[in-house]
Image 1: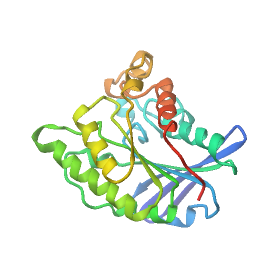
Image 2: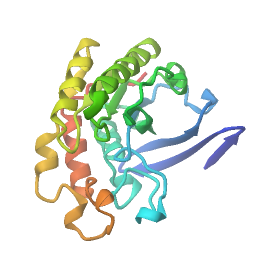
Image 3: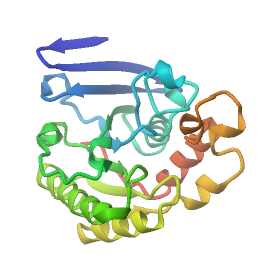
Image 4: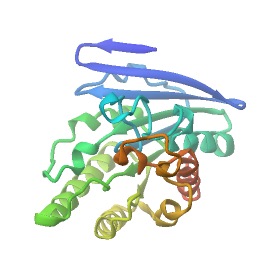
Length: 243
């Protein structure tokens, strides 16, 4: 379903997986109506990331999906697999509300202090917030310090809007300096850092071995196998209860 109102647009999709369902929101725009969020005690998961989390279709680079880049289908990207795992194991109601949002604007080597696009988090009230950023940061020329300040501001904003557990995922392309910043800032807010370096190094974890994508940038993203390994890794740490 597509919901439209002024400058905001939400695409809600319901996927039936086994004996439970996932309601997935994909959002673009500057404002948001929280009337769309379920008020009942569903398990709500917020995932904030870059193209690995969600990327709109980009035919110019050979990407036609509307989900985590390089996954073959929506249900095969890591956030949907994670929601499936959490719904099947930890949520008695078997209903999961997943909200994957692209925040790659925070990786563009420009200090960001405006987080108004996260005001919806207070009403959404997620049980878990997964932050998966950092791979696009250019460390040279003060870029790492800029990202550190921006990342700090992001977690501060999230903490002010939500009491949900925060999980900070390290970089997919093993950015050691960036990972160090993510870990330090995350732990300063009482969050859980998740190292995924072993996952990205496993054979078959990247889509470049399938030959499906001609664009090298797209092909460096996680394959279906890599997406599932990534979800499994995050799932090892996540502890949630429906709100």
